[in-house]
Length: 465
Picture 1: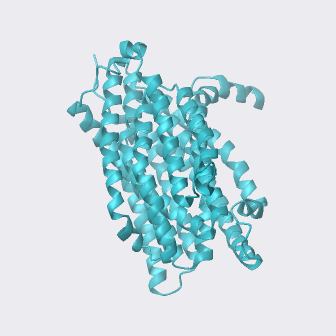
Picture 2: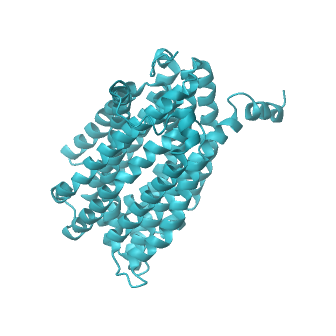
Picture 3: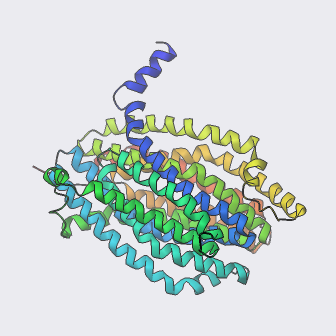
């Protein structure tokens, strides 16, 4: 069989690229829209002041660490819905949706309460006092507004769990289109509004989340969906299903929490090396988010597809979905890695304020270039970790993933870093070598866990007659 014939078979055949792209592309576009919002925040703040961009990533990471933990719980409604769809039980979809919504509401209250711990929390980082003030301001706005992001995850599960994600894409694209000019206006001021810097960036992002929630809700809660999926009449809290959401969603949330906590801790540690290493690392991670965040769209897509396959009792079908999704992930990631290696200076230059001194620009560019080489080194491996972990999550193996992440963070990241610090041999390269090893450890572990097929026997939803 020729290469072209083989490719066509894999593209158009069962569990092929075409089917995965139909489900995954809208989610990739949705996550890309979220990336645009975050990227715009940091790009504008980089041109607002050096302190603003230095404060933006640590504050955003701390906020996102909490938000992703809560989102891992309420967003697990996607897998429940997918498995109910796969097991031909559409009347249970509305109930699964509402358990996600109620968990999102509880999460919004928890997130908003973080307002009162912001100052002591960022004091622990030990950053420059001027940067700490900006970190606190940005964090507070993001945590109050993140309730809408949690609702987006829960309400959007209705579409992503069924593999129909165009509405999710529409909502996120509209939010991003509105966010970009609003971001500029609120950060730099205009039309009678004062320049609000990091606070303005947080307000613009929060409004984008709110707009996305409103659009999703309009399309979910319709008479047609009520008749088929009971999306209105199933609004009550159903304890057995809510416990099931917590049983599988809580480890999923812990996974996201630990993974991002590792990045957050990493950024704060580098901050102790000085402003240039911190700013360069912030810029490198901001650029990396252009790659990583859209890949989460494929992570969500494979979770839904595996969930549907497992709901219908077809684990081998789930495997075919996973390996074909991995091919698509590599096809997306390879051009980015080439760009990081060939044009690092141009990418870093996007974040450098125009009033920065030439010697500072040179130092920041030199350090940032090396960091982008590290990112290019681990990105392909990271792609496999994102896909295989998404597949395991869709099958319900969230506890196993949690233990893998905890082992990697402690054994490959924390212990080596603190050992080097104890012997006073830690450098910026030491930090980044450990972080690269951590990414590779998790990705390799996720692959081995998937390959051993223990997840074939996991049953997430009840048998529905």
